[in-house]
Image 1 (cartoon, rainbow, N blue to C red):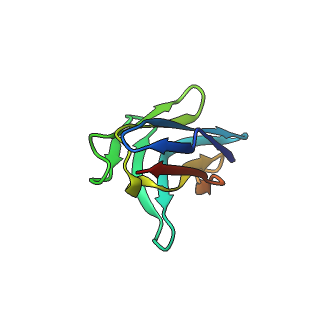
Image 2 (image 1 turned 90 degrees about the horizontal axis):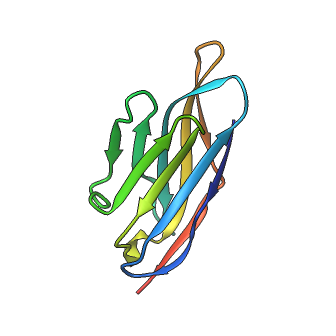
Length: 120
């Protein structure tokens, strides 16, 4: 499974960005997809997660009411709409996917990361 992210960039405080992550490959089905972020000198943290079957979401308190995660099951794509961005949102954002393979085994994959920078 390959994950390809897009949509990062530089934006001013209060601005918006939309990240997308497309998964590709064969012989898998998605259990859940998520966005994590890692700022310099900090640990990677979960931003938002969404399940495939019921689109159940889990969003970090620090971004709740500002970020929205969505999934397109037909395209195996997850998006993160980010609004009211703050300098503390600056980080590398990573796409994550939990998938089942043909044998019912659960695997986890990561994208290469996309930089989001918010200027004050």
